[in-house]
Image 1: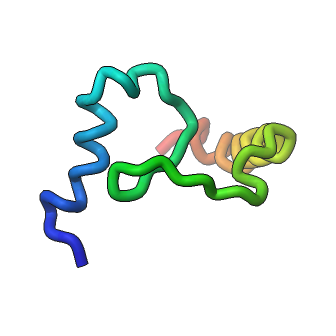
Image 2: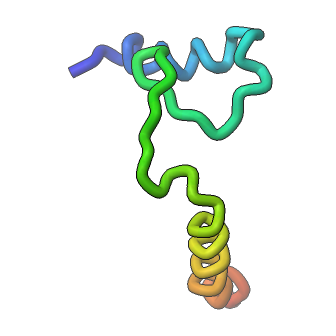
Amino acid sequence: MQSPAEGASTSCYLAADPRLADVRGRYFINCNRVAIGGNSENRELAAWLWTGSGELVRPHLLAGP
């Protein structure tokens, strides 16, 4: 198990290193970029999931108290 400081190190690294200012949509573990493969970069599937998720939650977001 990591200490709180160790657990925060990757987030702090990504937030503070100016070389990573333009990095988007990538995954990091222990301050290292990792590839995760599978459907993680499937844009068609991501669009389908985004749309479907929106349809499922929309009625709950628009409902009054």
